[in-house]
Image (cartoon, one colour):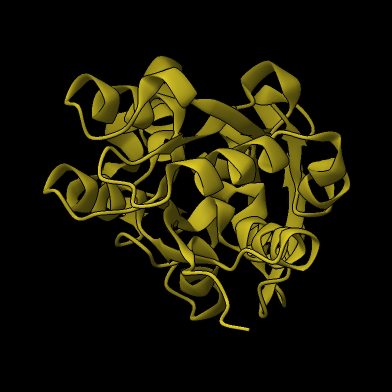
Length: 231
């Protein structure tokens, strides 16, 4: 028997590990193959905007909204998948630093020789936090922005940064780094990642089935294991 044509999806790096796992589980349960391509979120949005056909797009909720406004994804089937917070990491051989409070994180940033952050929505929010703290100018020369699709953890592991901030899901399990934990609640940066069918989807019915699975209770345990919470 010939297997069905795969559902083709694109996502940002923050949800790569989770979606690969959930896609495999959905295929086992339904017999419908799913192929997700994970790239930097900025690049993913650009490709969808340019008209590249995908059955399903999983990006930060506001990015999905912008694509919907441009007619590139179907807003009527937008599905919130996970809530994802930002974590902090240092090199594996470095001393742990205190990140238990807002003031502790501010102090850690001021003390760091190089601070790495991402290009995604959490990176934008992090820079806004530095500005609110009044330290943006003082640390400007020490900020290192990871290129789209490049994990912040890899910069830390290579010694290009001493302190790094990125989605918890992207720092879990990175070799050469110590994950200190999530930002404290008072400054936590939470991103909702949502899924929507592409306007050029070739398999709308199959895609709706996948979206229902991504939002179902069956996927909750995997989401938590990957450092995120069900949306």
